[in-house]
Image (cartoon, rainbow, N blue to C red; front, side, top):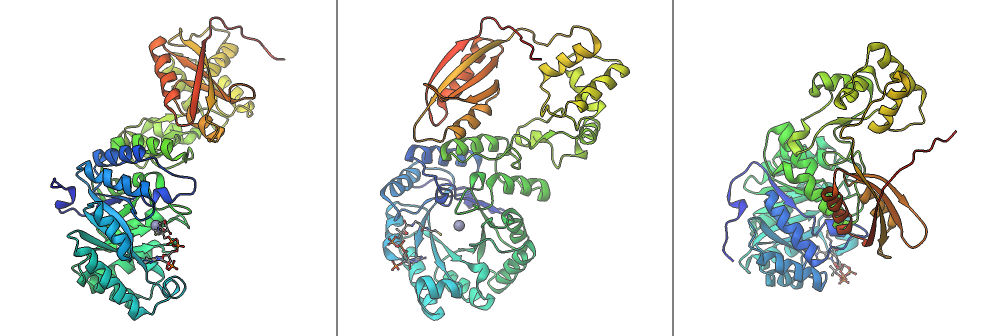
Length: 471
Ligand code: COA
Ligand code: ZN
């Protein structure tokens, strides 16, 4: 199929997304074909350069998904993964991918215990299979698996062999994530120096938490392709995440790769499809990424956000916020209250802050509770703006195959959901929802109904509410 390919433009660095191949190797993850197509389209809209769509020889549905993704006519180059076997290569070629990526473990450990061949024999196998793939008229990438544990001189021989056989790109894989940034830069610059005409990719696993740093170091050493997955999915501890690599390239090197404003959206989509939910402190997309807490930090941010932010949240289409608990300070509380239209004298503010610090059991002062505290301290009636809201209870039944807590966690992340409880009985979860009006309530309920794992919902609108005081 002829179509414009994003890789036809010379760029300082290309992103190779492998959410659909490496990401599906995450324990517990299996995307449907429809989900794969959706992810592929969204990745293409985001602007990734290459999409590793799957390893067609693995299973019939993987092959079908690769075929269908190819038919989409995306601007990204579509890659089929393959072992160094004629069967796998033919399977990938039949899917009409733009590029076949052939991998082969090249460390002595892999040669001895997996492939049971000598170094010389491995070079022959690599050359033969790269040539075989090229004979199908596709581009070829060769992945030197376990490159980071391969003796350098032999690794250079491997790279030369695969390149001479027709692979324009060679991926050096840090298969068990043992590189450090210094070693990654050194490795890539030495290989690039030895084989200057080859384009190098880094495939960095995150077993020691250094995947993103190693990708950036490899880029500094001469890599022009960085393998990523949305949310860092992958075998064991995963690989470098798309969002972290793309934002780092922009913030630290001023290199544009993908549409950063849409990166949260695709992260949430992949959370939903994979069932793997990120922690709140996840970089870039986590709920807390731009939420400050300590009084000193909030005071700094209110004066100039750069004091405690590496980059403005707007870069990724987000906004900053701060929370109130015993770590708070006067400036944080004052600004929070002024945002609600409440102005206090210095004495009143001191009292409110003192009371907050005394109540260390409150983990998060919500605006409503803060206003109640202000009323208590000042004896004045303060009104929440906007005063009128609709409250509702949404009762949720989950699919029996899905972990209820993962659904509850996703429900709790929806704006407007105030409280989520896992319960016994006919329904599994009940959520307390607050909305401006019926339309917004309807949108919130629809969002809940669309969540993966939600089977049925039942919504009750609250008519009257009696406040009770516990002694
Ligand atoms: N090139 C060629 N052969 C390779 C290889 C490579 N890069 N890596 C491993 N192999 C061989 C092994 O030597 C072993 O061969 P053997 O059966 O002759 O001993 C075989 O592949 C792997 O063992 P096993 O999984 O038991 O073989 P299988 O024939 O039942 O299944 C797959 C092979 C590929 C279909 C199956 O393992 C699978 O679906 N894997 C998922 C994809 C995957 O493993 N990807 C790794 C990406 S890094
Ligand atoms: Zn991998």
